[in-house]
Length: 468
Image (cartoon, rainbow, N blue to C red; front, top):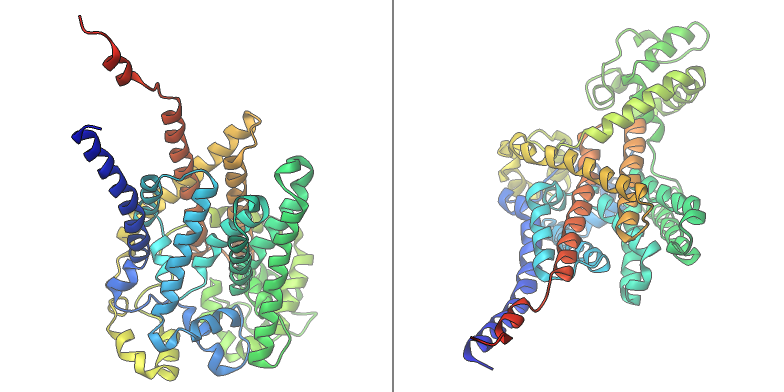
């Protein structure tokens, strides 16, 4: 072996070790770059509600006690342990998915990770004390658990199962998306044949069932009530209010049914957020405790009274949710409830929290979204193109199954969140990065295919040609 060949071989060996080592350290750190720059974990409107579950001992709408317990265990370290776990989990899920789908070169995996960090909401989700990071990751873990378990070890199967169950228990919307994907697998089993096994589908349903048991157990342990996380009726009522359906129902029925909202039917706020979280008559009438039964009554009966209107509103809300994908909604400098919870129950962290850049309005999401929004919408269009091309060619390979799963997850997320809660950018941003991930996998596999079919031995033939 010549000196130049030996040097080249040595460099390749060093590179084969250096790239994965750099990626293992750099990707988690870059995923947490927003929080590290901020000086404290990023907070959101809803963070305080989750933090308070351990201390207040009662259930509140849309605040999972499972996620509250998860945050509580990170309190002694100012929640940096939570963020570290989120970053490491993200790296593990991405790397496992890439390996399963044949993207095994270290350079391409690092390139995909860096592209996701630079162009999607992923690092902002990983840096935040919120359930949203688990929504998209759990779609991938469920897919691996159901359809590709033969490509994972027994330990990976166990971790995939546990992660999926935990993620589903952190938010009702995530639970609904994962349950919907399991039902879709059951529905498409006759068409997919051997691509989906009954054992895999059973594992998916088992993970969702364990998540439900986990949530019920946590609710009982903290509140003494064996009940699901409350708030569904109130949140749905808010969406109907925003669509004008509640005002119409009150005008049509207040002369027949005595309701607390009847005197306020001409003063209802324009949005659900203003009604539920602003200074509205909702506070005067006792908030969820005083209004839950009435909101449920109106929501159920308005659904019966105006079915066509409800269907049209649901379609519009779903479409709007698919297009609302901006990063950073609810992550700004005005979070009075979350600040109050931290100052009341974690006073030793109040100074660090108040000194963070977020609390000084230093985060410019407008600039961030000049990149994130077009990448998200463009990736979704490319995802649909990939799926459409595969359907036209009648090709059902691994990537088609991945693209179909992500498309169903995006649609299910848009329907559940848009129809129940009303469209919000936060709900779109937490899931749409999956589209970009799929597109990057397709690109990486395309380059790999080109390399496999590239003519080999060209230089060898030249070298062996006799000189004249």
